Amino acid sequence: MTLITQGAEAHLYKTTFLSPSIPAALKIRPSKPYRHPILDRRLTRQRVLQEARCLARLVREGVNVPGVLGVDWDLNSVHSLKGVEKGEKGVGAGAWILMEWIPGCVVRVVISRWEKYLSSRSHSQGNGSVQAEKEEEEAKILALLRRVGAAVGILHKAGVVHGDLTTSNLILRGTGADADAEEEWKDGQEPNLEGDVVLIDFGLASQSIQDEDRAVDLYVLERAFGSTHPRTEPLFGEVLEGYRASYRGSGSVLKRLEDVRMRGRKRSMLG
Ligand SMILES: Nc1ncnc2c1ncn2[C@@H]1O[C@H](COP(=O)(O)OP(=O)(O)O)[C@@H](O)[C@H]1O
Ligand SMILES: [Mg+2]
Image 1: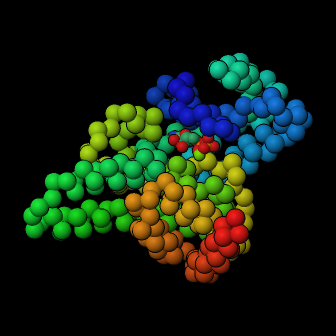
Image 2: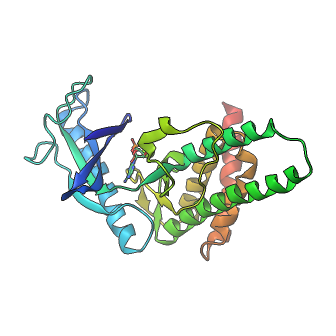
Image 3: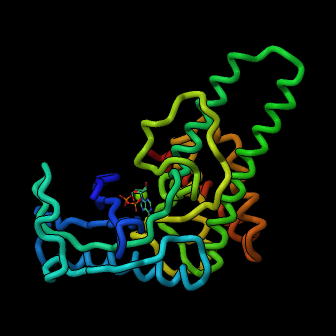
């Protein structure tokens, strides 16, 4: 197994399923030794089940998310991964989900490569065709941003809000190297912006068709986008356009988003 990421909540490994040629993603939620064991078991169980149920339901609805291959939510069951992880943190057990591996790169990395590519190009400017070229390239990033918005819209249409929308929780399927191969990238190389946008990381997702919940989902993405990609932030409106076009009912959510923003601003003014 290859460790891909080790976040505060979950560890993500790349492994295989049934045959060595079928890659799979193993997401482990380690038990937290500082938490009361009964509370720990209950919370871990809830998050893992939540994520697995959401994914299963969304696959059924035809939303672009990884399929679930297996799950164990009981930290103490015979299937739990005791001893698999004994790293620096001394983790001994964890509940887990095994899911389809989505080849590609997270949107966060794709956009930051794009920003680097643009700034490397702007040094070599100087003739008339540059403007046309620039517009052509901008069209590609705009199209990606609209696909991001559409992916969120299709999720909402299926009756689920994500709860943690960031550009790290979106994978652009089939774009060159996997997320774990970031080093192979040469700065200034043009990134591939094609491919389907796949949503991942449903540990905080819930079922809702409320405008308010949907608008908060968009607001979280908007804030995350602004802090992760300040150079591309002026184009965020394109995400909302993609969202608008993706399902009936998006209009009232976008109106609600304005209220949510206003409350956010007031809150930050009060400190
Ligand atoms: N099904 C998957 N296929 C490929 N890579 C994945 C998959 N799920 C997660 N990853 C990678 O692992 C990272 C962490 O997974 P995620 O579910 O977002 O956990 P966390 O709760 O730690 O953010 C993702 O940002 C992505 O790079
Ligand atoms: Mg994540």
